[in-house]
Amino acid sequence: MGGSSSQLSKSVINEYQELTYLTKQEILLAYKRFIELLQKENRSNIESVRIPTERFLTLPELKANPFKHRICHVFSTSDQGDDSMSFEDFLDMLSAFSESATLEVKSHYAFRIFDFDGDGALNESDLEKLVNHLTGEEENTKLSQNEMKQLIANILEESDIDKDGTINHSEFQHVISRSPDFVSSFKIVL
Figure 1: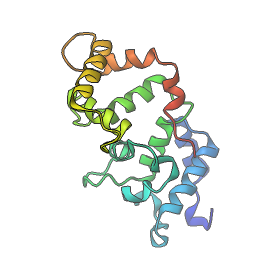
Figure 2: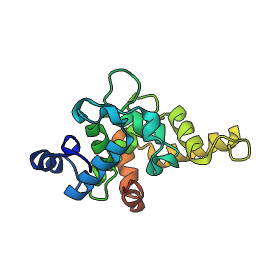
Figure 3: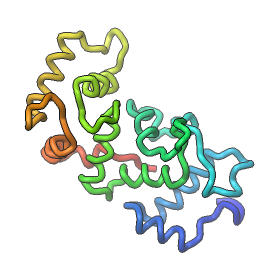
């Protein structure tokens, strides 16, 4: 992995293992990938370095994901509003998408990714954005207004248990719990 300035200590690796769903090998590989995204001059003090979202979006694991910008937004702890990520943000993201992460962890982050307006509920606007991210917004893939309205009505009919017109986190978890493929499909593997 390079010189001594680009190594993680055993105690730091152990701490990351305790705080994430990642193995030692996955942490070391994540560290290697993070270092590769850095500019050479920033490699000396990894704890304080933040990588711009644009560089994370070059990772093949994110590049093709229709929610790549939302993923970076949700996992970024930047207080600058730029969605840049620290190494720990990157580890948190990889941990949540790990095969070892629990259904609860995966559904928590999926809900946050799909909650575009951040109000704690998936409303019609969030659902429309979610569908557009999945189907694409080009003329040949975009749903008509009637198709979108019907699809959102169907989603709410199936998921909105308390019939308040939105899907809250517990309703979302209930839907996800009935979908065994969700856990295996909600992952990023380095």
